[in-house]
Image 1 (cartoon, rainbow, N blue to C red):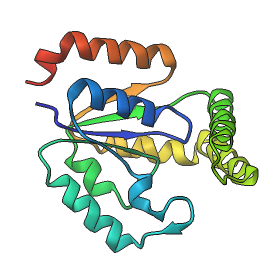
Image 2: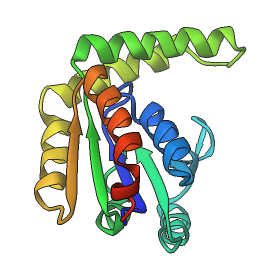
Image 3: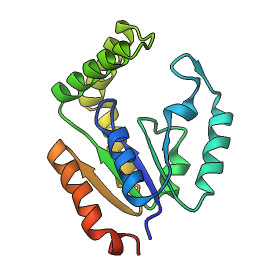
Image 4: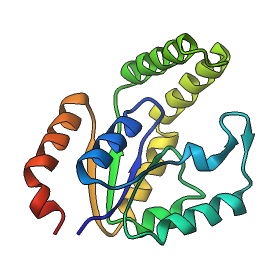
Length: 172
């Protein structure tokens, strides 16, 4: 039974969307690694020992879905997972989604600064120019369980549809 799922990918790739949908379909709790990284979201970071302590507690649970861009301090959680999903998308789509997210949050009253979104777009651009991409490739190469790579919306929708159809055998 695949009860421990870890989802990686750059900002704007659809990790949270996928995690929420899987959580709903599989009835497994979803953890957003941003909530572990940040003590106060996007303002005050937790120190690494505290993050690792929280992750260790989660990893001891029978089932979980984790998602986030982070790799260094979550390596033990990735190893502990039974399924690794790498979500990716072309840079123009990632940029569009990040801009859309910024406007949505601002319209909801969030105190988000446009410069932070620009910096996130720059980080995603660096990822796409192989720096972060190679890191994810190395994680996948060193991973001992099943890996699924999702590269566009159609693949994601197909994967989510297949989970529903295959649910009885998937959970074995």
